[in-house]
Length: 350
Ligand SMILES: Cc1cc2nc3c(=O)[nH]c(=O)nc-3n(C[C@H](O)[C@H](O)[C@H](O)COP(=O)(O)O)c2cc1C
Image 1 (cartoon, protein in one colour):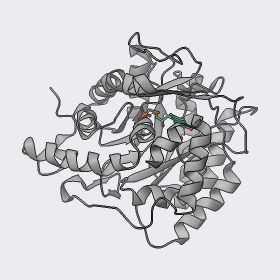
Image 2 (image 1 turned 60 degrees about the vertical axis):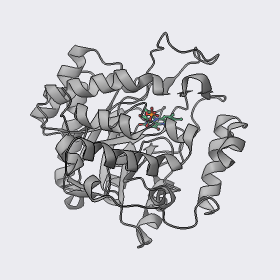
Image 3 (image 1 turned 135 degrees about the vertical axis):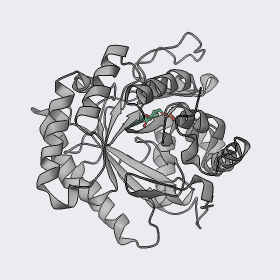
């Protein structure tokens, strides 16, 4: 019922109200976590209760991590965080494409900045009652002079207060950001981060993921695969939202500027994931994101090569009940295929 009321409001207002309600614990009063043995995994030395995570962008400021974990997510990725606070682009900048079960956004990394988010992360960790996995997704300020320094700054500042770090070089709404995916530039960025990592004891073992765009061509994809293998990158997140507009879109908002997410990006982002799994010979941990709204779609991503998955847009359309529904479906799908554990299904699509 609440979700139907929120749908009547402009998307960003609805989001702000949702965050406020979550913060006040109005929506959720007790833990809803159901543990399935078959969905537990240890990946990169981190224990995940299940493979379904909340994608970056929902909890940009690390304000409702505990609440989202209580809904049943196996992990929550906060951010994108930039060194300094920034307002992002002019409103309106988020559009719901109801008919297409999709969203277009050109938010532009609106967030409260690394200092405030650090303090929110510290508060979360002081709360001893939940031990699930938290990732921090980092980016650069719009007005920065040196983009790589922004990543180094956030990595150093926030890396201690999370289980993994994501380097976001794929959001379509920050000018120049996606150029960091180009050969040479991405390698420089990775090498500098890894060098800094070796200098800081607490960060040495922290897994680093790189989040890439679904709009990369085959050559760019191969370059990233080779660079990741050559530099022992821990993981890749595939993918962010797309600037493409599939012909199938019917909503009146389909030509708004920004990144398209949700159902229409499921197939392309899954094909990309599968290509990357094959290019990296299954040697690099992959997180599959894009258009997931059911256990079946999670399972498709996992069979395409993902060890973990994330979602955002389907949460807007279906509400938090989607998580337990997905976990139940996933558990059943594994059994049908005769697997004992979700990890047995990774990369098993024909
Ligand atoms: C409103 C909105 C804001 C987002 N903000 C971010 C962000 O700050 N950083 C990021 O890496 N991805 C961001 N994303 C992309 C999602 O994390 C995800 O990669 C993408 O939406 C595809 O997943 P989905 O189809 O399940 O939504 C955002 C997505 C939406 C819909």
